[in-house]
Length: 253
Image (cartoon, rainbow, N blue to C red; front, side, top):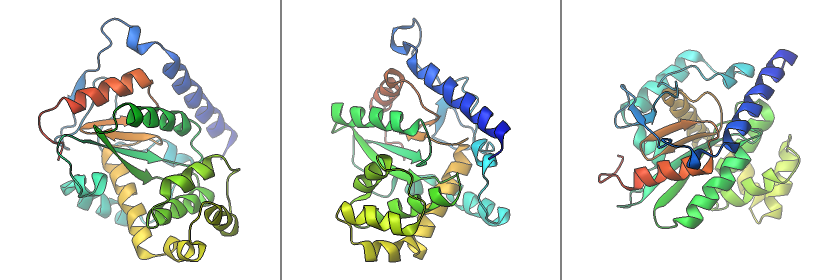
């Protein structure tokens, strides 16, 4: 990554942390207002956020994925027809709002948002359902960790592995990934096989297609019910959006 890119990225990080520190819940008239995403009903964004479906992901340009652009567009076109199964899965529980979370292991402010999501799920355990999406955008180490995370889900230990990764210096080779996996009780041999399987690749491809159609400019990305968000937001605002979504009479999909 070039020095100029690092400076820009650092400025974005500082801005987002500064915005998180504002007392959004105490500012007058700060209730969220929404704008429909015209080509992706029933999804919406925060009014005035400037996020639009199909926007070019700004952070991806810092380290673009090495894949065929036509294939990537084709996958996005397929997912756009009916994004809900790829976004939230096929499990639907009446009265429970799904939250799709897009993360990257080297994202410096994903950790703060994850703590807020944990708080939300503890406060309202019966109201929301969490769906993890790995969106590696910072090169091979991120790709490796993402593959391990998706593969660990097949053994029911995705979040355990992710949290261990968060507490461990970045794992940059398969041997270190498998050592960490064994420490959290995963079958390391099975994990290694799954990491290179077509199913795991398909999961990552679907996540990339979703990021493209929702216009995510990096991580973290969230889709809380109908509401699409890119970047870290204050907990008070996250909770207010979640409550708005929970009050909607009809399911999102």
